[in-house]
Image 1 (cartoon, rainbow, N blue to C red):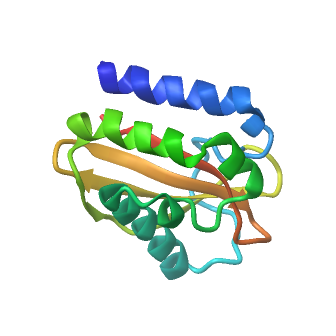
Image 2 (tube, rainbow, N blue to C red):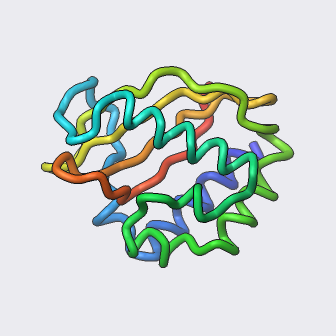
Length: 144
């Protein structure tokens, strides 16, 4: 439960920082939509960010993020997130294939993967406009 509260707290903090409008990929819609990224490119972005989680490397973690995302989740917030999350998840081990999911708002999509950590399974995703490669939202949610 502590991990779930942490994730909810982080997401509430992100929403309060004004990312709700730009980070709109949250959806349970079936796979679909189009993206300028190929599945291989999206998978490489997702895995690189997860490896950056292991390395505690903010520059690699936030590569491709919009300026609004970087402002809302600065390096110190990332370091706190890693420090608070790692005891529950352990380190990132592997990821499944990238899956393209339609976004809730028109023009947005979500690239997501199910990531295996030493102690947890996480649905990790980037939200972006279908027409560009800039990350407008990041999601790190436990998989039951």
